[in-house]
Length: 407
Ligand SMILES: Cc1cc2nc3c(=O)[nH]c(=O)nc-3n(C[C@H](O)[C@H](O)[C@H](O)COP(=O)(O)OP(=O)(O)OC[C@H]3O[C@@H](n4cnc5c(N)ncnc54)[C@H](O)[C@@H]3O)c2cc1C
Image (cartoon, rainbow, N blue to C red; front, side, top):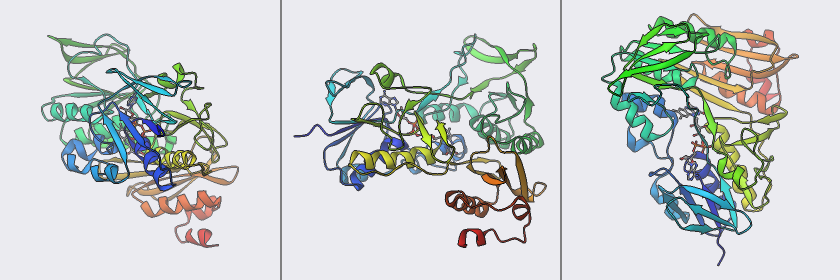
């Protein structure tokens, strides 16, 4: 009997590789090995509705248990893959024992980037990646008197918006000169900074952290690079993530800030595919290698990996998109804003309902929408089709952008 497919990982990409491999006709055994003790679940609510209780634990799983049973996907939960022997086709597990495979899929995702500073290990200093992290954060949030968020990225801002809406004093410490320097345009960053300030969140931009202080093992304050001391009985470190590529790297697979894959999600070993946050892939849209951290990327790339495992060729060519919820704002982004040289605003920043269209050499390359979901959906179509309004058309609300899709 064939040893089948072993998937290492327990989230969007792992689940979707299994689902898509089965859909594409892969008939051999599939085993999904995850170090987390629960079935794959949604991460985005962990920094949003899950913290407020709006999003219940029962709504978190990506698929019910029956899905795995019906599709003959065996789940080995709470088991960490420790090493790979590609020549012998075996995965060793941390608890002892090993699994044989014919094909291997790696969907190991990322982990929070650590902050190597004195005090980072104090009680009350938290990270947010897993359900277990979110449970710890949720438990502390209600009783927190003052909160410092280190890092002005999406997760930090989402936590800040939840905490500020609960009436908690929040300070965000960000090393760059603006929020979300890696992820969004200066226009959106400035807009969000204003929104946060208007909700009472204090921003310390161009500010570093010198150390984190506490008493009796519990956090009490954060000391900034300029000497300012910020009171804190809850600190969230949210300074980005590191791809989990050690397993692949030790086994000899090419890694370069991400496990390198081609457009069919194949690694440098013909038996091994990979998908999701842990990979660096050639983006047809961007014309370069990218490592993306998004649900869209994990799902779409995993569909390609699943097809590859079943012997089909389905190149990964999706246009990247992402979303973030802060206060009553739904921010939706499609395309890649980096390298754009011009923008046009459709709608009203004052009314907090607008889209910014970004152009490079006159071609549309990205759209960021705030509370304008229809623009976002339309943008996905336009960018996938390679169609572009002019900046004047984009800014003119009387111009029906739909005509460009229909054309
Ligand atoms: C709080 C939060 C909010 C987010 N919000 C958004 C959002 O609004 N929109 C959006 O698009 N994206 C959002 N993201 C990002 C999104 O969740 C990720 O892009 C997505 O989870 C990536 O999926 P993945 O399967 O590639 O990897 P991951 O979700 O990182 O999963 C990797 C899995 O592999 C397991 N694993 C790793 N190594 C091993 C091993 N050696 N053995 C066994 N198991 C292993 C890990 O424990 C984990 O379960 C958010 C992420 C977080 C943490």
